[in-house]
Amino acid sequence: MHKRKPTIIDVNCADTQATLQLKVDADILDFCGHFSHFPLLPGVSQIDWALFYAVEYLNTPAVFKGMEVIKFQEPILPDAQVTLDLNWDSDKQKLSFKFSSQQGELLVIHSSGKMKLGK
Image (tube, rainbow, N blue to C red; front, side, top):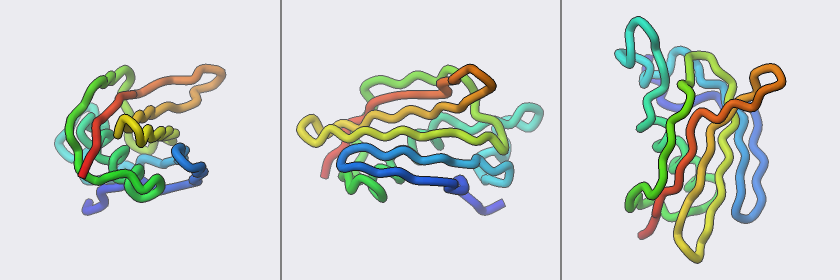
């Protein structure tokens, strides 16, 4: 269990937007100990992934300067397939992110937020 990132299924990028389809593999290290009876992906991991993929695909600054808004609504469980939507506002130096998944007819929002980035 040394894996820290999900398996990327698909990536679609535009200038300031990226959408990633991810499989949140059960062997990701972040599940270990969070929690043994009901493993779920920690919120800090979701924030880390949003920043990591924003830097990689949108060429955003890599320095985290703080969260403005954050909501954790539904847990992300092992082996879930989720969509990560990223939107970069270069004028405001803000990254918006949203983790969601389709569960039958229902679109489930797992988490969303805005973070300030800089150099």
